[in-house]
Image (cartoon, rainbow, N blue to C red; front, side, top):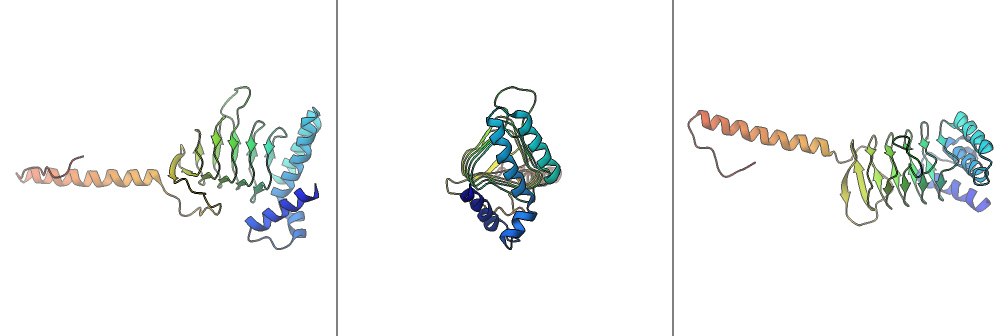
Length: 221
């Protein structure tokens, strides 16, 4: 138990440059409080003491603003940065070395039964406000950009952005965990730029037609 507690403190120092000393982390980090409360609630949940587990979960939600269902399975070195508004569903399965930022939802898509929440591999990072919905799997080393909505499986070593989420990077190499939220690829913006270029070319062709010139056949749509 004490080894696990030391791991929890170490990952905060590793992931949060604002962390100064252990006492500050223990007393003021709501993400850490939510994780510790979840471990206790999960222990009762596994022993069929569901009411006690849910009571602990709801009390933790009241104190931290983070809702983790006691049935969720969470691996080691899990880190929630800031944490307000984070929601983790009952059948979620989260691997080791996973980081979530504020406003992240790992939820379902309806009233389906059984496995209805996401499965996250190891070394996954989900940025602020992202939603991962349904019984889908995010492979190891996946990054999800801020505000994205992911509805389909994501292979390992990928970066996903947009609504709905689109894979914009996948190179087979290990993905770093220090996601730069300001420098994400924007597939929607790239598509708009491509359309603008095609419209510009079409206007040029129309002008040539008006002037009686032949339409250039050197470029096609």
